Image (cartoon, rainbow, N blue to C red):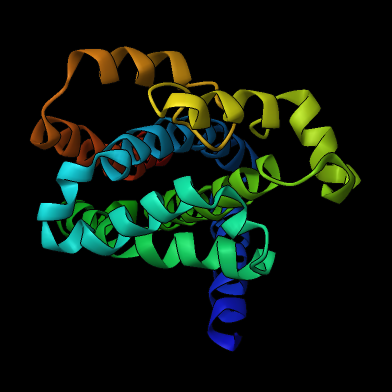
Length: 217
């Protein structure tokens, strides 16, 4: 769809523009930190959306149903175009992430450029994470060589690692790279209430202002 292409192009353009303003060093630091943070956040959100009890909270009803359907038909992501998969993840994550960024801007207008940079990177990695998730469900022959290389380097979740999640849905929740999986697995075992899990997932949106403060000075 055109709106998906527009959103993906806007995300990339905003990232490039803010990187130009703040410089390569700030952009690299923000990218590295938000890559790890996006992986952590993907796991925390996954824990909530895998929990059927979250269906009782109206804003989460549709996403919870989508995740349950994904458990039943794991290749549902593969039959959709890659652009649709990436854009859908960004559309879902953008509203709360944008609200947090706007609140941070209201408190510290001087962080405008760094907030644009960190928000853009976070949304970029949100889409990237869903493409990583999609690739993990593809047959080896279906995965494009660049994505296979990223899987081998550990920069995308490997099919073997993600398949561990689909065995019992109680481990390996992260879908960007899987680096943060041990931390999310530890929290999954200790925070069992759905409201507590939702609170942890909500905290994941605050990486954007925190990294903005770090790179923006």
